[in-house]
Length: 223
Ligand code: DC
Image (cartoon, rainbow, N blue to C red; front, side, top):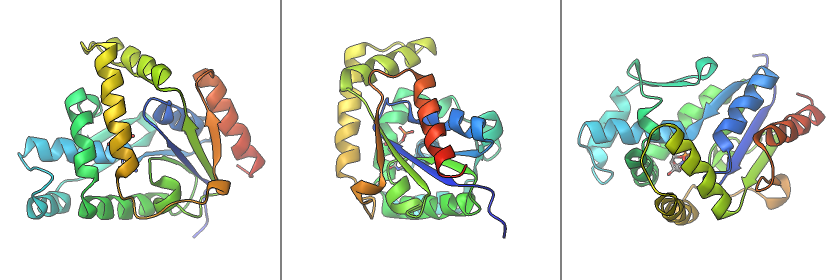
């Protein structure tokens, strides 16, 4: 089957602008955006709604077999069984719970398989913690976005207050630290060679700078 373009894999810690950067790079290149974090969030939301905890593997397996998660890349929406859950999956309670579900091997296995299917023809900007190491180890471009903790907390706090969520900067900072620790110890099932990854420190960059930088790297590699 004819490939539609490169696979661009974007990894990054919380609050580095990973999702927005990936979405805008995809728009600029005419690629699809694959937000793998949104898929883990969707599982957390679906499980929470059904009262299924991360330790209940049988119920999780049944949930994964019956729930349909769709990424409507063009409109930036996430659908669960056809219902728009784009806002609900960004709520702080779901954000806090998502990591526990992402730790469950059968959840990871199911979502990684779906992600690989979605990206197999290329022409995709995929983002997530394990994207370069596990999901697309052969991606033509692998990026890691990093930024200072304080700057990440400020960005995430602004984003949440803009959405009308009442939360203090201190709480956001502490949530990020907790999630950084969880992300660091999670077993993703692989690691990427450091020399394959282009690290971009976004602390002093605007979003537009970040997007330009990734698009330029993608063009160099033939996008
Ligand atoms: O990137 P994010 O904040 O939307 O991710 C939501 C959660 O899912 C977070 O706890 C990290 C986890 N995650 C993961 O384990 N693997 C991925 N590929 C993407 C996200």
